[in-house]
Length: 354
Picture: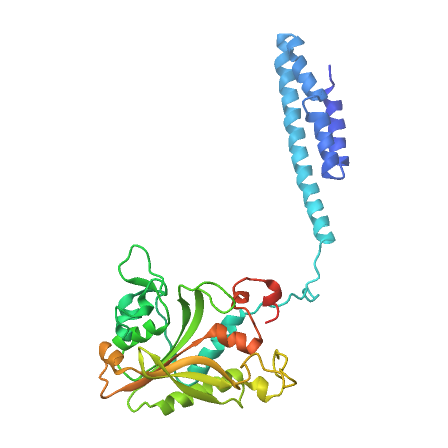
């Protein structure tokens, strides 16, 4: 039979000698595992006389419990030492500067939008917003666009299925009518946001694009105020030496209406951006302005008196102007982007340029 005192001494010595967790586990298996001498002694109890079996079993159980406690205590010591060694080996020098990562930046369209908004916030305008799924009353009726107007046809406007006369807004002008129906003049707001048209995607058209609307309504507002405001905007976007011109046009919600052109700085600077070869020895033609010296950038006009009346504003006491500018068009003109799809393709090579 196994000598219990001798077995205890061997086991305790092996556990104490264990220098790491792996050696400790080997000692545990050797002295407490299923094939250990201790387990063999417990299994041989059945061969002992009944009067010896009980005492021998008690001694073996006590030894097993003692060894398991010693193994657990030794495990805690070795585990703490292993953790400390790992921490020493993997210590970080917090005084070292971190690895430099390139900073992110807003999308080019967001940059242009923020720049335009900042111009008008600096002029005292406030930012207004509205829903992109809009009631026809705000998108058309209050803007003096009658039910039979071509813009309301499904070939031009995206209607929301399952709702009567609800559309994805075709311009940011519905926010103009929402403001005028809830706020008495004076009103000065700038409205950035996405708009939707039933357009086929190509280099210059997208069914989703971004506009910024401007609206000022007060007493004594004239076209001179409109021109001065747009001149400030154009010079902020394209350069302090730019000029603008207003050409007569038509929009249902403004009267009179105008298309606004900005002078082509490429031609004036003599750089002839993206020039096409001249004909018969003539000078090359600027692709930006096609040699005209002017670039169309937005539509504008005085708010139609009908719109003011529809929105509950006395058109005899108040007047105002409104304009809408496409952010994609400005970004394309300023940065030489030839295809509007580049803004939405999420191509890192394109995005990294701006």
